Length: 114
Image (cartoon, rainbow, N blue to C red; front, side, top):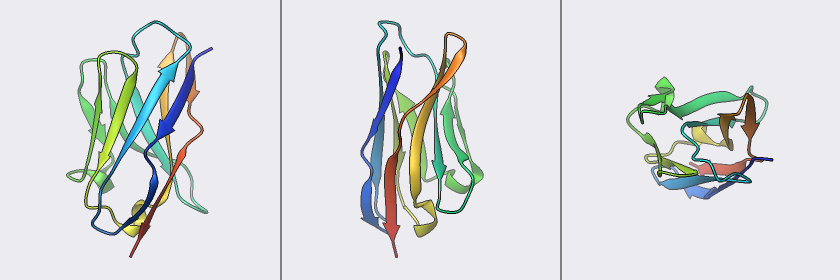
């Protein structure tokens, strides 16, 4: 059973940076693509960024130029978040589509104070 675990969240002032990590376990296979989503209080979960098997990234308009998604060559992917804003606050979850189903991590809280 594949499991995803996020880390790197926390409390940061506006303008600061955080780097989130998502590590996949429970498989010896390489995870070739993944994504990051976030959910703010009282709002629906929204796409933040995805990375395709060829390494091509895709970003929500609200984070373009500030966030960067990347992955290593095995089972970890990252979200570098710079110039954070209070509206970036939320629970950030990683996901991946693996062997026919979608997997999600439990999420990590990111809080940006003004």
